[in-house]
Amino acid sequence: MSCYEIEALRLGLMNVLGVGDDSARDHAEKELEGHLEGPIQGLAEANSLAEVERHLDAALVDLEEEVASMDSDDPEYDYTRGRLLAVRDAERAVQRLSAQGEHIVGGLGDAHDTLHETFPVEE
Image (cartoon, rainbow, N blue to C red; front, side, top):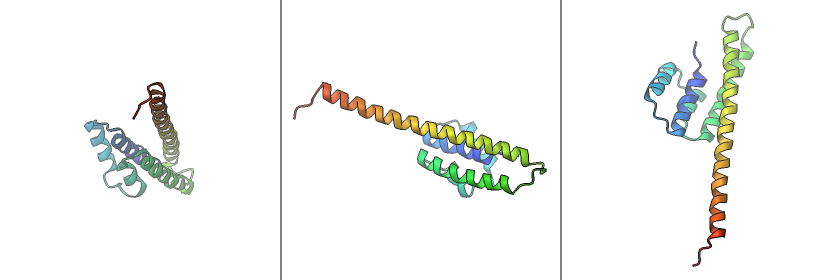
């Protein structure tokens, strides 16, 4: 059993955040061998939070469809539902990260404006 969405998300966030943990990257890449296609590939190769969010949303749609098509007595059913919950939780974490980043950028703009108001530049 593997959590392709979670491993691909780890890789994408490592790209976006510049995390250089080679052992974590190697582990995730091994988990994803043979499964790098569609949203999973896009997620693993994402270079921005917007790309991460877009591919994660697509991966969630695929996973929701997978769960919906399974019989509840399938031995993989509970695990797949658990995967879905974990990926939905990860989606909320990425949304918070994106919102916090936007808040930081806005705060820096405010700080810049305050500096110019306090110390006007004469040209």
